[in-house]
Structures are given as structure tokens and as C-alpha cells.
Length: 360
Ligand code: IPM
Ligand code: MG
Image 1 (cartoon, helix red, strand yellow):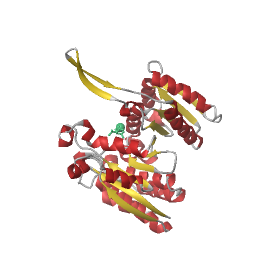
Image 2 (cartoon, helix red, strand yellow):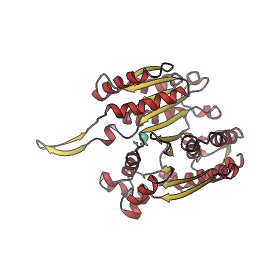
Image 3 (cartoon, protein in one colour):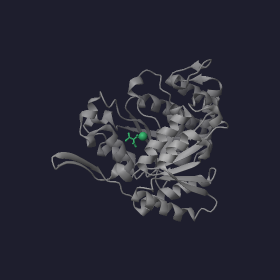
Image 4 (cartoon, protein in one colour):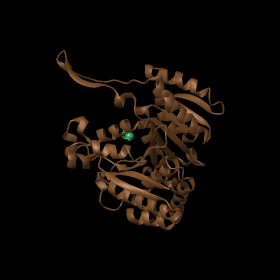
């Protein structure tokens, strides 16, 4: 198989972690005789520095014409970086929102999983996580508040700001279907999260979920208010299988869920649309404070590359090989600083990549 992958290394630790993921992809390509061709494009702060915009049309076109996109992370320190002196539409994050929208990536999958080997890093009491937990946060990614009309204007002698939130039935239905489809391949439970006691968008969300659920009689589903869900995630994370929710709630809850695992450096993500195309990136950010020091954990990005093989290229065995190699490296006691604990063997970004390659 030959595939063209657009690669966005991005800012901060992005270049280091993506380099390791490419190393792993090449190794799996060698093993199974696939060829992955990479075209590097700029997005985020590095693109602002080079072209004055966070995502150029040329870069976007290359992404559009590829088979998938591998992304590291973008953005800098919001209080010190000059990128944040620019108007909002020219900041690094605007590039990310634009590529999601332009590529139509409405379904964001963020797994939050408690690794047996890393149980100690989980901040919850052991009795709450006995037996582990494994959930998939499905976040709607191209609608809602992040893409609504905004304005800040003076009214009656003071500034008034507005952000509009809207959802159409179509937007809700397509993510709902994806959520239920994924639940069918997992433990067949969907928790749909909204704020239907206040918001109209949430009441429509609930109505559409009810309709879609009729087509999935095997899936158990429930509705949960977002504030309650935030609480349940730390009270009893084991209850969740698929959490299905709109853009902003998913943004917040996925950070919370990743923190609950205690190892955000291990969590991958995929952003998908109806066809096989997808963009794959770690769930964590660009960590500018540790950039360039060879200490970042590349595993989340490597796992994202594995998700790419599975979801975009249907290479299930290849994906599993990568996941198994990671498990083995962890079992042997190798750790990057973020997941380090007593008695384990500390390694850097590159060494972690090499270890994973050596187990393929
Ligand atoms: C994320 C990030 C982005 C988002 C930011 C950087 C715009 O927090 O991917 O979760 O809110 O979607
Ligand atoms: Mg976020």
C-alpha cells in the first residue's frame, strides 16, 4: 500500500514527537511493505513566523489532497509569545480551527484509558479505578460555539461581547451516528452529554439522539447533564463507554478525562469525517516549556499514527503491532519523565521512539 500523508509538526514539542511517530510509521511500513510518503506543511506559530498566517492556502491544499494528516501540536505560551499579540483570527489556534472546518472533520475521537502499567499515575483513589477504565470521548468538532458568529461592540457606553452557538439536526445526526457506530464496536453504551435544562441547542441535541438511538437497539444510551458528567468523571469513571457531546463540552470533558488517566502524554486522538480521511494528533498540547529538550513523551503521537493506520488505511494488524510494542516497552519499565516513577528506567523522546521501533 502506498499513502500520502501531510505532516504538520507544528510548534513546541511538535517537531520532536512527530519525528518519532514518522520513525515508527516507516518501521511498520518496512515490515509490511507499505510506503508512506510525507509532505511537511506548516501550521500554527511556525506558519505565522514564515508566512504571517497560521495556515496558508497552499498548506491547506496539500492537506486536502493527501490521504490523511499527522499533526503534532500547535501554539505557544499565551502570556509570553508574540503570536498572542495578533488579532484572534491570526493566532496559532485559528489555523487548527480552520483546518478542521475546511477538511470537514466533524467527529473527534479522544480515548481516555487507564494503562495497567501506569495505574500509579492516576490521581483517583484506587478503589474508584479498580479494574481500570476505558472510555471514548466523541466530540463534535466543526459546529457550536467555536464556529458561531462573534462580536465585541460598544453598547450604551460599555463593551458587549457575543458568541453564537448553533447546531442543525444534520450536524447532530452525523456525529450521533458515528458515536453509536463506535459504541457498537465497544461495550455498546452511549452517554450523551448536554445542558438540556438550559440550552435550546441541547434540547435539539437530545431529540436527535433519541431518534438515532432507535436505529441501534443493542446500544444502551442515557442522557447526562454536562455539570453532572464533569462530576461523574472523577466519582466513577468506570461507568463510561462512549461519551457523545458537542464541541465545547467535549473540549472541556476530554481534558478532564485525560487528567483522570494521569498520563496525558499517552492519549491519542482522531478527527474524522464520513469517508476514510482523518487528521491524527496527540490529545495534549505543544508544551513550549519543555520543547527541544528531548524529554517529551512521543507515545500519544505514535498511538495517533496507529489510529491513522486503523481508521484511514484499514491496517488493523499494523496498528495493533504498534500498540503492542508500546505495551512491551512500558512493561520493560521504560518511561519518559511525565510518566516516570520509582524504580523505572528514564529515557528521552528519541530513545522512546527507538525502543518502540525495536519491538515492532
Ligand atoms: C483542543 C484544543 C483546541 C480546541 C484549541 C487549541 C483551539 O483545546 O484540541 O482541545 O479547543 O479545540
Ligand atoms: Mg482542548
